[in-house]
Image (cartoon, rainbow, N blue to C red; front, side, top):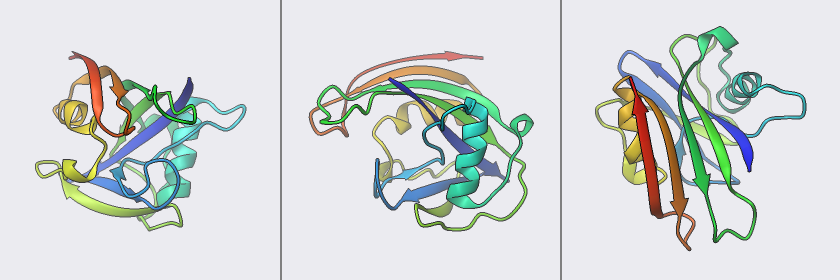
Length: 156
C-alpha cells in the first residue's frame, strides 16, 4: 500500500477542485496531489504536487492535515490500494492555472458536485468542510468506482 497526498485549496467559502485529464481517476473532479517521490516527506510531496498540477506554491506550514483515508481496490488489475493524507490550504502564492494533468474549477463549499467525484467523497468531504478530522477506510467493488464497504471515524 502506498502513501499519497490530496490537497484541497479553499478561499472565501469556495473549494478549488481539479478535473483529472489523464491517469488514475481520469474525468473525475478531485483535489490535487499524488505519489511521493523517493526521499520526499508527505508534506513535501503535497506541496510539489500542488505546484505541478495547478501552479500555486505553498509551504509546509500552510498545510493543515484534515483526514487520513485508506482506499482498497481488491478487484483492480493494478495495485491501487493507498493511504491518502488529506490537507486543506487557504493561503498560497500564485494564481491557479490549468496544467497538462489537471483542469481547475472553483465550487462553493455549499454546492460541491459530488456526482462528478469519487463515490467516497460524499461521505468524508462534508465532515472535513465542517471542521472535523476524519479517518476513513473505503473498499471499492468490481467496477473500481462504487463503494462496497466503509468505516469513518471523525474527531473534533
